[in-house]
Length: 281
Image (cartoon, rainbow, N blue to C red; front, side, top):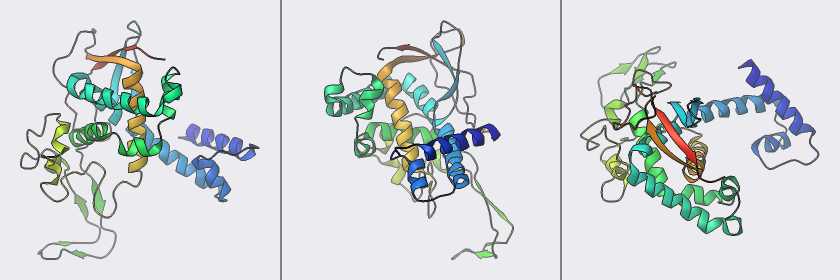
């Protein structure tokens, strides 16, 4: 954490001394007169969220072909798509359509440059397949037990007979909702179509999806997190071919299950690897 703080401080100093400011968040905060320590605090928090949402793993030495999946929402998306070729094809088609529509004269450039031509509105509104895959991934992997403590006076539940005394903890197991067969058909199966027209299983009951929190205070960084995950998935899908394999490089035929006792990392119960080959620069 100390190194991260020092790195952020140096970066803010560099941006502050630059003759030509950019339009990103740090320069906007500097323009508004926000103190350096506050900017660094915001940047550190954003970095933590980014690590949770991003692809995090370790490249292994076996012919430089395998990537060991550790945790992160993007990692799980790759694992699920590695097993579900139908949805992998849908995501590939969706991303290719965006590049075709917006890259234009940049069609022969690098994947990175092609993706930078896609406007923010398209990332947010023109990727329904990717949205469904992300939603289903969160449903299957975000199943910990959030805790909240009542630090105010005793709370009386309207219409109920239970009080929540000051100092008490409220505990809710998210899997009671996300893996509830009365809400989701075959709840342990990867099936993004369950959120589509005609099914919409997440609307069977109030607060049936809790991947981004719910109620008054859902995740404040939800839009940024979605954008981040979509960009990473788009880059990896468009630039690489990949398959899920075991430690010896042989195909794996059963989808890895999340370790629900590992609520912060949500790593697979069994180690798994992605075998990949770059197809575009």
